[in-house]
Image (cartoon, rainbow, N blue to C red):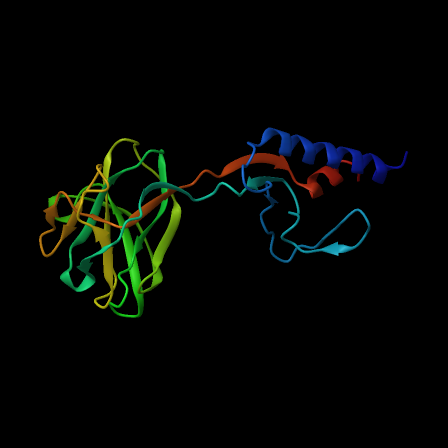
Length: 227
């Protein structure tokens, strides 16, 4: 048996082990991605060049199983009321996350208020005027009447603890919400000084990162064992 055939058996075994070790995704097959090594081109087993995003040149790589990344944690989707304009300033929503990290957030923009503009969502451990510290933030372009989501590198937080989303970035758009207290774990804040409205909630959602990372040898590293 020549070295290429032996190598094929070994590589197949490694891929099979990585897939069997991963959680089963309910809606999609696991996707295995290796980090990119700039400028590096590896040969596949047929001798044809493949893109550098498929292989890394040496050492070990992270096999990232992606289908479960950025799943919704908290979700208050009701938005029958025009809750607040960005121009009012000091807009925030308190919430309690179920998971131990938060990787993004989104809000429902009010139809007919503005058109397209920047939306920045910040994560705070308390309100800015109450000694809070901003933990992270991200910005996206929002379109009136649609959801706008922003994402950041998953930030570790304490489940069951109140955190705050602060909404800023423009003065032309508005946020939809509900005045019947649809979300019992937080409330709306609005107007200078972050006035509280205990029975009001913006239409908002938060995300957590359920990404699974497994360390494995790269193909190039395995092949080097036979050089």
